[in-house]
Length: 193
Image 1 (cartoon, one colour):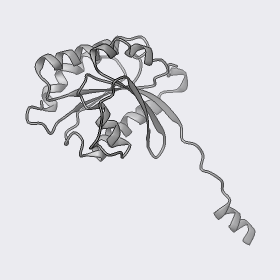
Image 2 (image 1 turned 135 degrees about the vertical axis):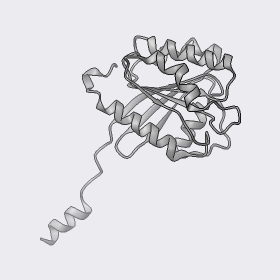
Image 3 (image 1 turned 90 degrees about the horizontal axis):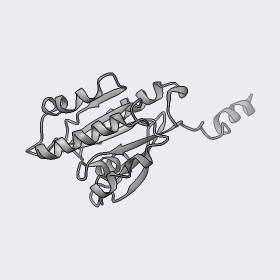
Image 4 (image 1 turned 90 degrees about the vertical axis):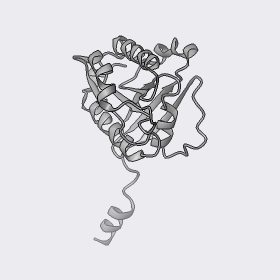
């Protein structure tokens, strides 16, 4: 009996591995993609350097791991975004809610292109309207009508960040956790690789 108790308490072995899901994170330069991912990974946001090509971060959640492939938003890099879409199981699109009307329209056009891309069009999308802490930030009610009509009939999840752009990790983690559940609900045969 003592041996069974000892074995049960001490010798269980490593926990089972958590499933991993590959996600692509896109958005224009300055939208806050790198800061968002650094915050989700509990890294310091003080010395964040914008991504010039791409970076991959593993964002841990209690029930799974999101491997987020962040793609830089500069014009000379956007033309290569589609080369990194293969194998993605979801898309995070980050936009700057405090941007000018022209920049918001450019972000809307990039979102539209992503929603129409054959490798992404059936995947869950999470849209984060970042920089809600800035004085010029549009409210969720102002941002949503400009982007939501693009996604009619698609696996689409919309979330507008209402808290300070970098400071509130819990709010961002909550929206990403909901997004993760959306990805996990898809049957493996439905996930494009």
